Length: 310
Image (cartoon, rainbow, N blue to C red; front, top):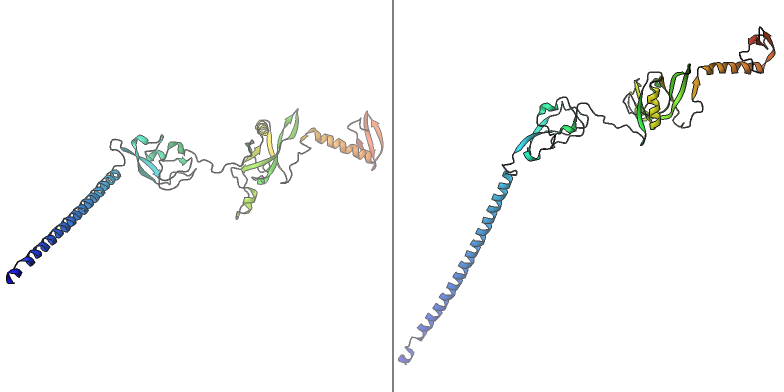
């Protein structure tokens, strides 16, 4: 019995189990090592990519313009400058600009800006150009001219300018006083013209009513809105005699029937008045030394200037 059960079978079984367990642990270790190696490779690749991308971005920011091109210094205002503003009170800053992209007429020396005015609005951050500047302030307000019409100015005084009542927005007639065939004559040459400005001021009557303490000041010029033919008539009339304005009512746009009065019309009106008076009340007529006289109802005697008068 002892020899039968003295064989080493249990010992052989234990060695086999240990051997299989060692092989499994080796496989697990190899798999874990491979996974760890793979993770290290991936992490290395990711960090390398980020470093390359950061280097490229840093290089692009550091050198936005090729060194071979270079830059120049231009001028730009530190704030918005409106058209017609003087540049004397404006502060200009230097800005760098690609040498091969400098706009035509760009200002590079602040001394060139002395005594100049802005022709257009100047934006900060944009280079100042000579074409944007002027030696005289430009008009900020455009005259409200009727399309197709023309603006024409005439000289006026306190009388011809209707004591300063010919303000922008009002309607006037233009009359010319001159000599025609030896007689002093006043003629309407333009009717229903709209006043655009009064001494360069375009403030209308309605706008003046809203201004506190606004006073009427006499100016020396008035600008009118007229058709081209009337503009030519005014320019010609300025060489013939004296121009004056006649005020119209705001709602009056009709053409005037009486448009001329001559020096001789005064005599005609006097004769007409005497004739009407004679026809109204007369006692009779008489002729003395070839001249005809009429005896009025009150006993006075008047000479008849026109013998053909009935």
